[in-house]
Length: 219
Image 1 (tube, helix red, strand yellow):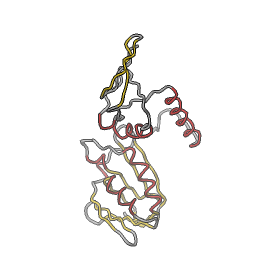
Image 2: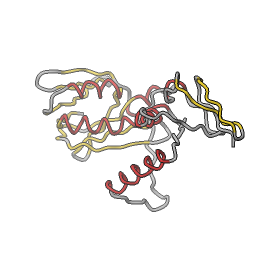
Image 3: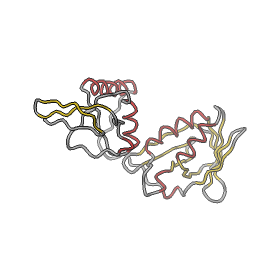
Image 4: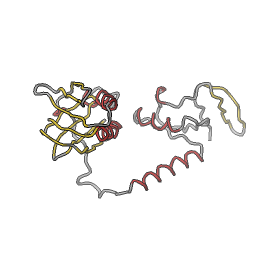
């Protein structure tokens, strides 16, 4: 595999698929990104076995092929490169990917692409729903606006990175509501509510307390 592409396009593609990279899996291959040079462009894929993301990057393909590379190492190195042409070349032996521009280069050891799990598709299922990017962004913005109006922070324990992104959007919040029955939220990705004043409501009486955790509000 050998190809050249723009650093900006490669960095944007890596950033997109990295949202599906698993950070706490017992399968090392899930922390890698699949790179495949085919049909005149570079295909990037990542999955955590719950979701899968595939992104195509415009590229000048000199030799087709595929490999996998550690997501964080590859993304961090590409982000340090200036906005110029980047060359990706798979070494003849092993799964070592050479990433270089005119001034810098790195050789990153990967894993066999055959070990990478298949990305699930919607083929054979319900017809796809097509929504414009502008409409989708407006819907997401309205969802967050309503969550702010009702003072509700969605608690999501499906995996850490997704919740960390949600928590980052609400770091300025001072009021959180805990709904009974939701899943456990790991401390390292939960909102930082330590040393904040909260209150517990028991019947019609509100007690102002200082706690280290979120207090459920009795119905």
